[in-house]
Image 1 (tube, one colour):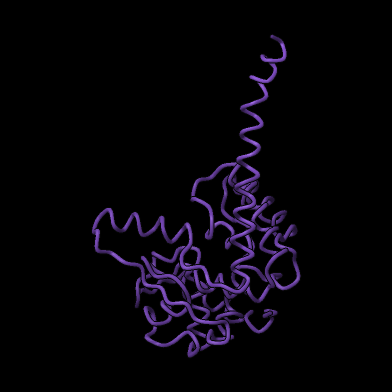
Image 2 (spheres, rainbow, N blue to C red):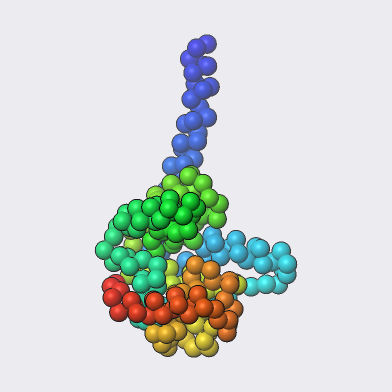
Length: 232
């Protein structure tokens, strides 16, 4: 009887652990596949489309994949400068940036700065929901390690630039370049690239032609640091 009771207590835990292992294997298999196959969509893209179609079932995302060589080096430099200056050298996490962000948030008394790397942002966009929880952050960290282990830095940046959001329903560098500047991603100037990078934290706030003092200053700051960026 005691053995049955003990099994009854352990069985749900073993079941949960088995499910967790299966999910992690699923993540690994997908990431391994994406080493040389392009993801057709991401969890974030699907969630955004669902919200858009709640208002209009005919809505579609604007997204067009382009290979790494057809994305302007200026955009690669700008995004690294804006989002993750140590992208080429870290292993998925920028611990110095995490510490700096923590200290600043403590001083401000609220979360005013994050420290997510490009790889962490890609992990979230590919697989996870927008909820904020310790469990989701732990899963994001695990996926980040998988991405850094199974993909090259060049491939991580290529996927990121092709799935990042740059407007309401606008995803990827090619769609963003056409949407905001009516040029291909390969044709972006340094100033245009810096402006796109400046939009990343709040992409739906900037429809084509909208300008703000913050966007001007942020664009100028990125433009002044772009040439320091190490592009894989």
